[in-house]
Structure formats: C-alpha cells, structure tokens
Length: 165
Image (cartoon, rainbow, N blue to C red):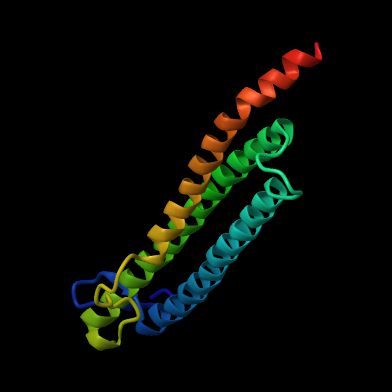
C-alpha cells in the first residue's frame, strides 16, 4: 500500500484522511495567498487610476493640452486592459483553488470525517454584488472610460500634429 492511501473493500486506492487533510491545508494556504494577491492588484489598480486622473487635472485649465490628454488617456487604456487581464487571471486561480477545496471537502464529508456545516466552502446568503464581479467591472469600465477620453483628445492631438508640420 502506498503512503497516504487507504485500500477500500473493492481493492481501489484512495487518499487517506490524513493525506486529504494535509492537501486541504496546502490548498487553503494557497487560496489565502492568491486572495491577497487579487486584492493587492486591485488596490494598485485604483492608485494608478487616481494618479493618471491627477495628471489630467493638474494645473488650472481643463481640458489640458491635447498631447498630454492623449498620452495619459492612451496610457490609461493600456494599463486598464493589462490590469483587467491580470485581475481576471488572478480570479481564475482563486476559483481553481476554491474548486479543489470543495472537492477535498466533499471527499472528507463522504467519509464522515468532516461535518457538512463545517465546510469552508459553504455558500453565504446573497447580500449584493460579489466583490469579484465588482473587480472585473471596475477594470473594464476604467478601460472604456480611458478609451472615450482617448477619442476625445485624439482630435486635438491630430490638429497639434498637423499644425506642427
């Protein structure tokens, strides 16, 4: 018999309870780390957005120089899309960890080694929009807002380029 396995009555090999509990701890720790990464990415995203908007509104005039507006807007689009994709990847990893936790917990419940109401993955009652949905929407909404800003400043930027030549 291999380490960490039980032999059932029909000769099948299945992980021992201790092995499952160990795996559950490992995956739970990975999920906590991924959750921290996800929130860190989201926090840095907002700090960057505030910085870019601050650059647009610096000085006493609005709209700012069309070259500055175009450049900041372009940078805003690129960064927002990059953040949206990074955030999406992080959220997928988080979901993958949670799916593995559910699988291990179901195996422990089936064996009677875990009570169903002691599962970490129990669903809470609906209390409004999920944070993950808000994260995704914010990143893509910012990308769209910067794209609109880019289009608005594009006319002035084009005029600036053609008048210089």
